[in-house]
Image (tube, rainbow, N blue to C red):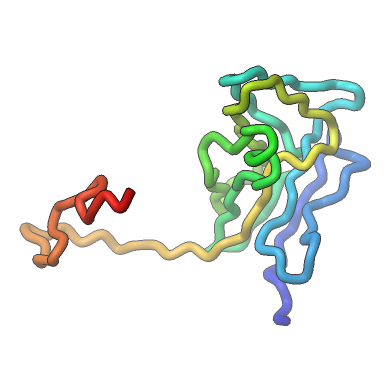
Length: 154
């Protein structure tokens, strides 16, 4: 297995005592993000409610990379809790705290406590486009069809 991309991570004051992101298995794509709430504080998301949950870390991503904040499948399956803007993009020039915008699509309130694994973070390469304005685009079989135009496939 190749060496990983070095990413400096700063543990912020309110996250002291929590671990920095780490891969839980040798082939995991993402690292868990933890809720960096004050000790003893709970954020409860009622059904349909959303909140920005602080994760207590800041990153210095290398040029050519982004970090994506993604949902945790277990929270989604068991509680209906997911990342609202999934995937959330952390740009390489951002140096502020990472947070997860969570929403409760479930039927019951969901309690978030310090150290709860609330989302996952995936490092991904970024391609940048050189946008070239043209008068016309080349023709394709699909053309301008979208939003289900290739079939319903119920």
